[in-house]
Image (cartoon, rainbow, N blue to C red; front, side, top):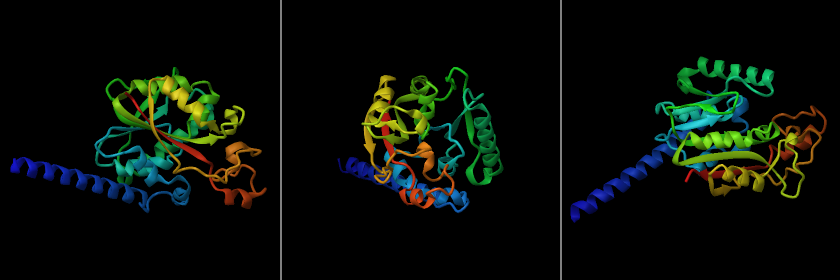
Length: 265
């Protein structure tokens, strides 16, 4: 009995140590001075440490980031997961909307991370085909993350298909983390401005089989009025209106965002 208690105490201590080490590694990945300067400046709006801790990321997981844009979160995730060999990116192959700009962004993304493998490790890719299925027969993911993509999928009438495809490539018990520009629940549906109603997105994702288990206000911004000439892109970092009222929009900061955590039951 005494030996059993000692063993349990040892296992609990080991689990605690691993958790502390994992969190320290995440902090180191975020404070990595080799991240792009313009990306580091946006940490105060995007709260990467609190966001990723909320989702429950750890290095033992097989993690997939969906269509990462120019790689703001990828710099952090790839550095954190570098020695685990468990980090993947899903990219369009080929893009089925906004073809010219998405092709350019994806090419620049791949070139940047290829040229910086010493910092971020070798990133592995899976493809999203023309039917918005993931060409990924071998891998089942513990965690899938998508940051500010849902409005584009909704605008192009592909959101249900993509979230259904995500469901299929996840392990049972896997976590889906979503960050998305948040519309007011009283506003009219208009994905072209970049904002999405939280209640609507939750319903859509749960319709594919997921279950919402938590939500966080870590990325909320009550200063965001969500009624701008150029939609969410009026705010930083895009500042689509140029110098027009720029100081006002800089004071508002980046958009109000929902942060949602789902599980595959």
